[in-house]
Length: 444
Ligand code: NDP
Ligand code: 2IT
Image (cartoon, rainbow, N blue to C red; front, side, top):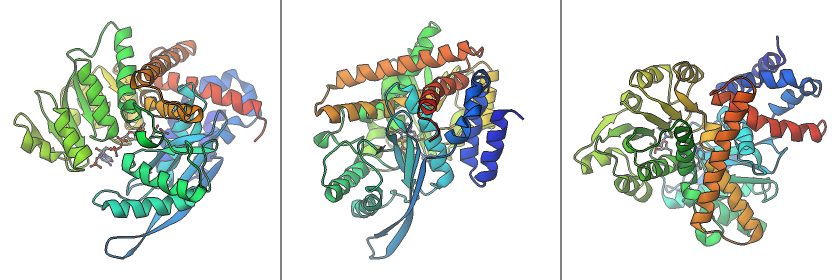
């Protein structure tokens, strides 16, 4: 067995019942084979064994009272995975499916993603099995206050800086920040994605979706192509999906489909984003309504069918494992050329393999969606300096970050003899800096 195989084997034994964590670890560690071969000092220093074990896992009770006066109890998590290159940084996910395996896979991915941004941020992730859907604002506030009452003792602007993810947007960050400030009596950059009136950064809302399109645009450009006139399918209709759609449309693409967890809308004339935003951002409604408001659109119950729609570029922006092998085959049969992952780990391992074998340009999540955390790090920088940059300044720094990530992963893939394999390239480029810092710190 190779060093990587032994570490993976041990990880699965030590952490049974964590399939998502196994999946992310398999993808990452497998691509590090050539790196650890070249650097025997990593094995001698137990580097991978330390890399796969979170520095700290915090799990806690979150009690709150619903609008009927009933006591509710949720599980709270924060996985502080790796702080070798900076304070733990990563989002909070509120979704009924959240469990330790999902938070660990997200935290593990985050280490390399954050490294790829080139900014000094370590990896972490947190969340809860709380479902904000259908809850009143007061219930969401009560939950967020209880969640932060425990979390606030573990985080800080130089220690661990959470942000949003699925189910955690501006409203939730506001309630979380209010409670942190109240208990800790400090107004600092302890969370990112804050509102503009209390320390947030311009362009953070747009950052993940815009960044996803910027890195894809660079991949197109390097092949003498562009978004102009391309047919694009985007899954999800949340924060990442909406701003990916906006930027793709600005660059001349025709976005024809989007979904929420109930079903998808297909609009061959092009998605009217203002209507999606009204349904999703303003009313917190269901995407089904789009087909009632737009004549050219149809609604189909269930999500998977969206990948059967013919497109040049697919941007999965909802959740993990939303693209399986069957969907991949349909996409390839319909001539998809580019798949860039806005969501975290949206493609299964066999799906990735099939895309690569078919010659599809595949940009993995840790590179493709790094714009969100990249601008979070820019928000931290602005907070430290107590200044604000303009939208244009942040947006141009974001574009720079994404273009650099593209070339770093492209170069790393070439350097190790895997040209065009961006899974290898992104994992290797992200890992080198973390490994270097961990080696410098000794056995900790
Ligand atoms: P939102 O909560 O804003 O939106 C999530 C979207 O995905 C919604 O349309 C939601 O539908 C859909 N969705 C969620 N779970 C499922 C599911 N199990 N099946 C089908 N659809 C689902 O989250 P974000 O847009 O912020 O996050 C989307 C993805 O992007 C996640 O994978 C996240 O980890 C990743 N990401 C987010 C970043 C950020 O800055 N926000 C940064 C980098 C990555 P419904 O409304 O019906 O639940
Ligand atoms: O997955 C992610 O990178 C995020 N949800 C954003 C994390 C952040 O700290 O901005």
